[in-house]
Image (cartoon, rainbow, N blue to C red; front, side):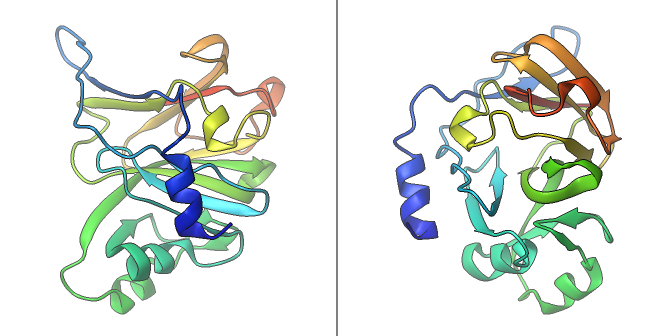
Length: 198
């Protein structure tokens, strides 16, 4: 199944909740605008999903995800220089130089990985506006993403911290909130929900 067909098929996935919570005195939950659901990652793929716009893309792990997002989606995916995504080190200067002028930007807040030490396939969550200082982002159920029993490490970016939970809806055992963990220890391959906060 091609990338575009998988994205359309992902829209049929039921039971996925993307949570965006406004932080502050009341810590109230904000119902964001309706967005397309994220794609499910097939074996051997790495994916990107912008939680606020619903834009997404999956590529074969090892392919340059940042370049593919710019080319196919018209979005400059901002990931810190030297970080690993889709099995490749990000060269932020090169990516910015090659990106056409006027691209919309989406800043990565967290990436989960198949393997320890940030290896293997990955799934990156990004936002086009807002930050972890004021908003929490997350998936109450990562099964529809194709990520049950897979997460072995994670990275957070831009002042964000990531947590993984052994049950859906941010329940059960947890590891985090941390900026990065090269190994999630006893939570290895057990995560069922994923949340990012400041």
